[in-house]
Image (cartoon, rainbow, N blue to C red; front, top):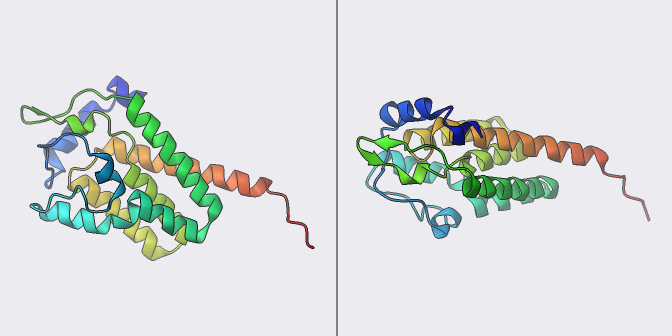
Length: 181
């Protein structure tokens, strides 16, 4: 609600102006195809966009779901629930306009929270490895530098991932032991 109310607009606008060297702010919102198919929406004209597109492939929805499901069905269920919350937030919350120069960046209007950040954290948590943790940090940093998301989008995605992990942990603790045959 704070994002929609404009509490972080100054921070996000500062990020657009100063820490998004790879920002490609000419298009509108990403399509469903861009969201589902890795690299489909990548702008190949920017090194930042190419780097973030390639590094973030494991954080795309279908790939992340497959990776997480491979490690834990419970965590895969948490990922699906968190993506449902992410999608709902993106349809319900609209932030105040952000601009690149005089151009309104339409893609940021409904970009909270970042699904890529959400899924990167959940993939790293599923594998519990320093390498996957470093990958998640690199993915989130590159998404920022490439101009895919604002800092509040990224923080919101990480917070939603944390809530999903806590929910999965609580559910795991409540499971009844299986009876042996």
